[in-house]
Image 1 (cartoon, rainbow, N blue to C red):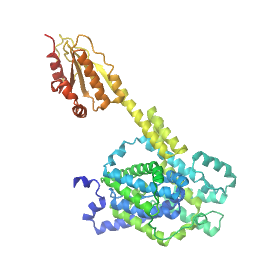
Image 2 (image 1 turned 180 degrees about the vertical axis):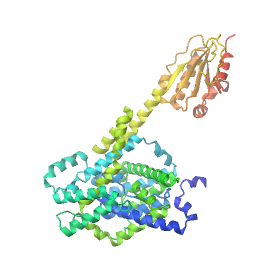
Image 3 (image 1 turned 120 degrees about the vertical axis):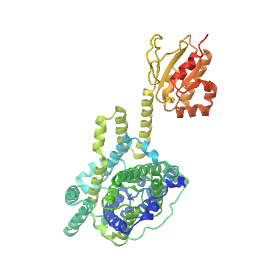
Image 4 (image 1 turned 30 degrees about the vertical axis):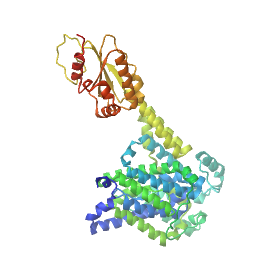
Length: 552
């Protein structure tokens, strides 16, 4: 039963003591969050290259299952800005069929990650990578809104960043001033409205005000209805059309979607834990995210994850159980059924302004600048390269290259700090007191002592092999108290050292071997090779063992 505890949804744990008073709070919070999610879901869908209602399908279907089966008390799931760039690229290259398969596969990967208890491993993705690709995504989102914000009269916007900028420059002469002014007004409302009210989202106010101005003023401003046919009603279930070729092509994008969903959802869960003083179940959260994405794909939606801003709004308005997230999904379903036709009146430049604000708020540019100024050069390299690859290539390349580069730089750091230091013999006439923590010890004349520092792995093993044993000695002591870990390359270095000792008639003695290196040695049979008597608990017993080997 303990094995299943880590993937048990929070919903089932919290329902045992659920009260009517908490239901009222969850109801209010769910409705308010649905109002916040409405414009964002529509805007994110359009920015991703799909129909407006598909954003709501995602918020309804994925949002419900993420709350119902997830590991957080207050997580709100749905479409987020992090996916816009990668979805747009998939749609441009493979169409909706490719996106459906990628979303379904990503959901399956997330479930497997949760079942294998990978929830805690996400923290090993360096912050330099997450900050770099987050800013890159934000730049991509803002760049994608220029056409609608300025009202440019041009064809489809290219997916690649450079081609996109070139196309904008070539068509800037077709700027529509009425459209631009509506977009600027929507931006100003979102910037200054929070000073008036924190309860009602500025994006919703901007949409209501600009839609009324455009409709009643009969302005020459394109609306959602001018570009899209909005479908009201329930999302329809449909199985994705699978082929081995398409699945193979979608594996890499699906993996990127899964990693993004895992990172953002667990980050959101950690933030919300701090707000409510709770603890989420990371592996259950991954399983919930996986089911939510698979169901979203089956009902015509797009990738989803936990949304930090909507989750925070849920907490601020009293939501404390997954019921609030489920009510948020059901409220959006009612809007989808009865109010969706009115969405056709929303100006496209207003939605562009909403997404520009989303991009700005998510960018984390202050953190980026701070890291560039203060971080080590190797970290800055990972940060900047990840950012540039996200903007000029795509997120898949950025994450893969960033992870590989960060891993190599980390290994280099570990190799740099790993060192071997020979002890200097203490004068035999010095009778001062010494302790286990003191480097100065009485070293027998027949022995030489080296102390190892840092992990003994393939990056540091070569330096270890450069030890030159002195002549006239028959005991070599390796003090390993500062070696926390060792891999097969480190073991190979010890094997070669043992061979050198045996050729020179020396005995190899290991002092203070930590748990992980000991297990590696034991499994490989190395301890049997050197003998248990030559594996000592501390330096004092090692020196005593060496002294016992002195030639009479």
